[in-house]
Amino acid sequence: MYSIIRTEKHKSIASLRSRETHTYRTRPTANADPAKQNLNKLLFGRQNYATKCAEMLNEYRHDGKHQRVDAVIAIEYLLTASPEFFVADLYHDRQKTLDAWCEAQIDFLKKKHGEENILCAYLHLDEKTPHIEAYVLPIDKKGNLNCKSFLGGAKLLSALQTSYAQHNAHFGLKRGAIASNATHQKVKQFYGAINQKSEINNVALEQALKLDKPSFSDKVNMEDYLAKQEKTLHRRMTEMFLPVVQKAKLVERAERLIEADKKREEKMKAEKLNMENTIRQMQKDAEKLLAPLKMVELLQEENAELKKSLSWYEKKFSELNVKAQQAKKI
Ligand SMILES: [Mn+2]
Image 1 (spheres, rainbow, N blue to C red):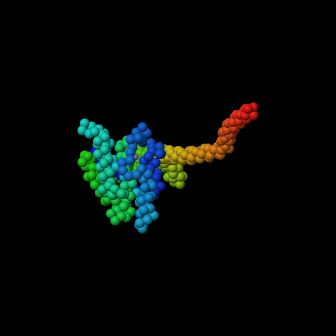
Image 2 (cartoon, helix red, strand yellow):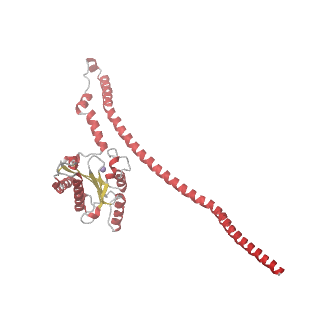
Image 3 (spheres, rainbow, N blue to C red):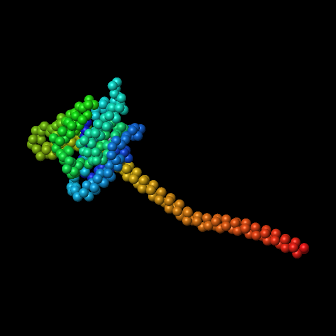
């Protein structure tokens, strides 16, 4: 079983924001199981790491530090291990192993970058193998933004693999092969590589590029022969690459669909907001319309009060009248 660490550099807040859509599944994630999404959790730092990064960079510049235009502003770590490490067996309780492992990973990040520079560490349990996605501000010991001091060059990357494996050695995890990081490719590139491998290999390519043997008449008419051969080669190459191009187009289309879906969602959100505003305005208008009605109600109530006291006076008056009449009689 191996410990696995991969890194990615981010040069903009926008790129971090786009990662947040993966971290929090606000964008459909093909290899994630929605039923397990509630198991994902924040282990350290702040959920909205893009905003936190922007805030920290603001402070950094406010302190009079210089931030280069193309500076790497955040390092993304993918921390995981061979899948079988996370499976329970006779000697290991899965939850205990996972908890201990998570704690150790946060410890690794703290030691490497300093607690204050960890933007976010988030555990994903809804993909195939448990893993932590962590984002850190690459601040070196002198307090400068300096990604190179962490990831600059093959030597440092190799040392990172080694120190990470050492940190996790007590879990029985070994250092992964050096090539494992190099072969790590994005999903799209990976599928591209598979497609190409299955359909175009060197043998097939060589075969396709072979010229037909010129006949006697061809040798006489070399120009015609070459023109014909060129056409044949062109046809063969087209046939060979067409499926690959089509698959690439399919991938592209799928990505565009996801993008369109995202836009539609944003549009719906905007429309919802718009409707909420309209409803609020309508409520306000209705209140304004109702105000005079309330006034009438109030006046009617007052009127009733007045009528009551009026009838009281009338009664008193008639009583007095009766008394006056009686007095007259006496
Ligand atoms: Mn993930």
